[in-house]
Image (cartoon, rainbow, N blue to C red; front, top):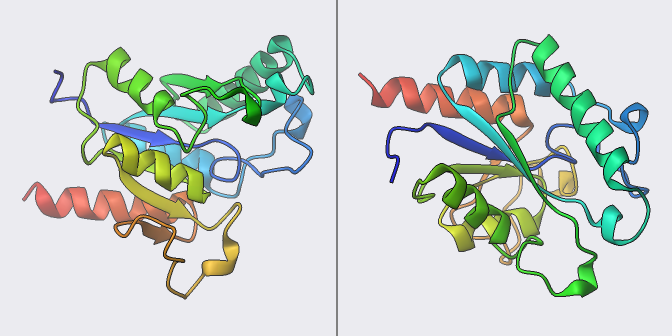
Length: 191
């Protein structure tokens, strides 16, 4: 196992970019959330590898094809690079919700794929997402669940999370606030 790799796993829609009920089907529809690209850059500059784990059921639903998804991800990677950052890998579930796969969050399959690819134990690795299913997948894989309020759950700002969330879920206003928290915690623990 690679115990020296510093890794952060991110959800995509609602965490890095604006989520859409109509799905993000083209590069033009992919709109970064304020500060998210810079937050990824800050993680990289602090020595973290950034990997995405994202449900992309629009593929399974026939709303877009692989060429469209690749174009969206190419656009995203270029925008992150323009902000001085890097996404090391993108793991996605292409299945529709009714396909019964093991990779669609809240199942931990995508996170297990990341664990296998990088040869690391995910215990305590931060997983940042905007939904209950992200937090459930994080918990199932042993990751530390971090909820950002820029997507599906802005309504929990300033109040206790519903009991359906893993008890150890930490809440942040956005990806930049998560990075502030992580880097503050990292610098304190390295002294």
